[in-house]
Length: 310
Image 1 (cartoon, helix red, strand yellow):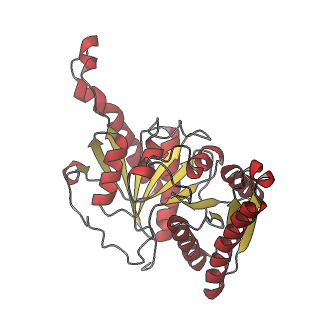
Image 2 (cartoon, helix red, strand yellow):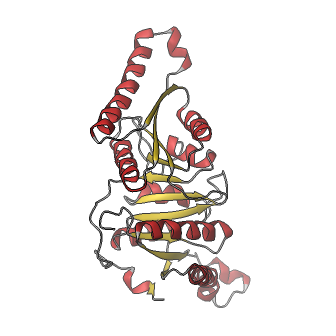
Image 3 (cartoon, one colour):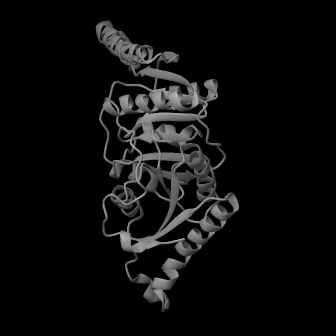
């Protein structure tokens, strides 16, 4: 479709069940969007210490798991009837994935997670958080036990540019698929503030209502019927609770909130929702273009030579 949002999708794989599940779910999105998918696996750097334990061919040893992961991905793609491009890279995983996505003009990076703990990401460690924080490509995080769908969408709103971009994607999902959209704003009012300054509490609540009203007005101008929720409390806890009550299929949220975050998102609302919700989460780093790509690499770079054709 000419106005599809995700024409080029990059999935990070390591051969684990979580990453293969994410790959399969991404195929469903690619079919709906009439886009195409590439799988990337990254050979991490080593510091030479393996030579101390008698390992002779370090390069082969390090490449083997990544190559097997791509073989597994190709096998799954064949079973699903999907044409898949496989890419083998070497370097720091998050840097390699992000650079490839940006040089290749990908609209989306998809990552699988084992469960509810971010430390169980498909590439282990904090790679998911680093991919989100390091680059400007939108990231789809898919827990292993979840099913990717876009019928019921929850969109947290906090007035930040990235949350407005998330709202725009939700509007477009409504237009394309008739998705049921819920916009939620959480007023994070510290409990001690009630006894110190009622005026400050009122200001926080007023700002939260304003954020929600702005989205309500924009939705009305587009003739989009949505639900709106305003709650008080700790944002990540409230959002996870609302997602459960709404039986959300997908959470679409910005990566930066009004309080400002570290580059790697540690301790952020986004990070905690990813850890605790168990739902697929589309982390919006930028607004999407409505123009379909031509299937070519738009910004050839140093990773182009590492691409393995299928």
